[in-house]
Amino acid sequence: MTDRLLPFDAPLERLKALHPKLIDLNLDRMLRVCEALGRPQDRLPPIVHVAGTNGKGSTIALLRAMAEAQGLRVHVYTSPHLVHFAERIRLAGTLIDEDYLAYTLSRVEAANAGQPLTFFESTTAAAFLAFSETPADLLLLETGLGGRLDATNIIAHPKLTIITPIDYDHQAFLGDDLATIARQKAGIFKRGTPALSARQPDEAAQALEWQALKHSISLTSMGQGIDAWREGDRLIFQDEDALYDLPLPALAGAHQIENAGLAIKASLMLGLSTEAIETGLKTAQWPGRLQALKAGPLYEALTDRASELWLDGGHNPHAARALRDFIDRQQSRDPKPLHLICGLINTKDAGEFFGHFAGLEVQISCVSFSSDAAIPPDQLAAAAQSKGLKASVVESPLEAIKALPSEPIRVLICGSLYLVGDCLALSEETWPR
Image (spheres, rainbow, N blue to C red):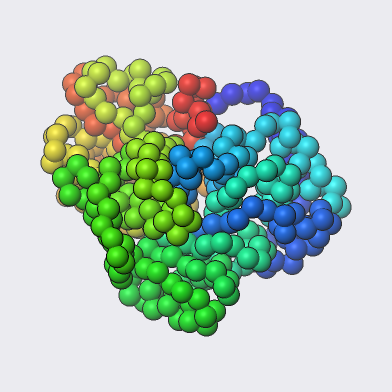
């Protein structure tokens, strides 16, 4: 991690200090500070608003690549960042300039006048301000938490809303059952705006359909008239009245077929060409999600060049299932000794996470990382061992890799985006761009 102070570090730290002691999800603070800033949310390009539990970032990355292949200037707002905060805001295709970000955050700070404001509200207001001042053709806007009361949801008339796969996560804020969580996500639905949904568990699907009916909007769902699947080395997408033979997405993992299907349908709804869709599928990048790492000190520590090193920040049940599926497919195609380097934060159920890997022939190294919420590695190892897995405590990912045998191996660093961010931060060569 670099020790260099960035221009936006100081205003970010001051804004963090204004965070309410308890998070009270509402839109009042966000509306107040944006009113003081001149309502930048009303001066944005056409918006695709994306909510869901998993796949938001991947779907946005695919859709962004398709839109840019069409020649569109695309703003993007995602979270969290992996190495430095500027990753969250992309202005017309380029990460926000550090000095401009600092200037924008300072304006939010001045407009807020010392009143309580969550960190995400502060940064979302800054993003809206920057988006409103930079010409673009499209804004891809990711929710932070939920949807209905998410800070991004002060926009009035998005062009399209997308719900990616829904699963259990952040139950303390969103509810303990999938129907309740789905209703929160569907809070981004707006009258007059079409909605698009991934394939969902039955209770989540029913809740989304009911919310669409309440808003009198059209809801298009994967598996109902549209679908995407793999055939050999091609992706087949079926629309209501056409069949498309397309390249597989560049993003790794079978679950990316569903995300690609959402992005393809969204692109068609936005009027993008088949050529742009094909190019976007082949060129999309999304760091930290089944990312093959091929540079930096961790990669260089592998003693056999036939080895593989993957990074994945998935941490909830849906993400763990996707990771297990990826492992099974890779091991079936090309068996190698398997090693997981894991770290989780204490809001996640470590036993449930490791339960998805039960039965695997795998060695697990449990590590800490730069978060006060990191589960102590000894507790993490005990959780893995309780599922019948071989696990030990190791000082760091680098030390774990150095201790691995000198043979072709498959290594996955997984469990937390904080851990993935620490790994990418080790060298500027691997920073997300």
